[in-house]
Length: 120
Length: 126
Image 1 (spheres, each protein chain N blue to C red):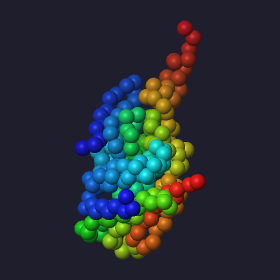
Image 2 (image 1 turned 90 degrees about the vertical axis):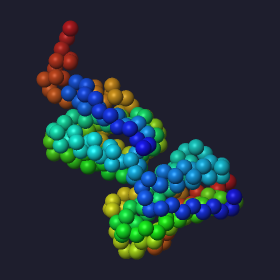
Image 3 (image 1 turned 135 degrees about the vertical axis):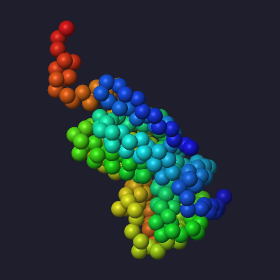
Image 4 (image 1 turned 30 degrees about the vertical axis):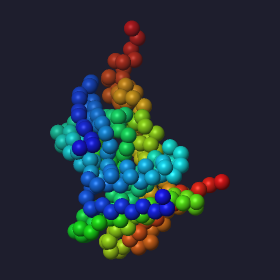
């Protein structure tokens, strides 16, 4: 599976589905249980953040996830459609957790990229 | 719904037991119950997360809000955590330094006996 895409409506009730799907992909990629837990939480935080940004901006577009699974490692890209200048509802707590959980975490505009590089 | 919340009274503590996942969708259920209790002046609280296998930052925010209310009323907030992945969220955010974490409800009850008179009664010789 080189790439998989998932789009969810910007509603809190759909965040769990994104977590479950991406955690399953991470397990399939061969990540250890503890790393799968990190993926589940980091992706949950990033997707919840995107959903809450959409709610705050009263925007109904889908939140998009792109999951890549290749020799370089496992990565997830979470994209929202909200003006990047809009502050987060939580003072940045979700992003702080994301950065603590993912070996590589980047925020570029409205896109959060998380990477678990394949080691060895 | 992926979260059940129920409250029981034991001694002079209110034990709020959550079962399931606490996330951006379900955290309002926990928030509602904890807000109800603090509004009623019930501020000796133990939140039992021993049967919670997922907790995100929205769940943490509910607990932080509760901590503020409880402290204003000179009450106590203790948390019971079993799952590593839940404990990790407290550790990564530093919240484990603000809210006492316990491995069981019994341990939380034992640690929250802070009333001096009660403490004396408990330790007096047989």
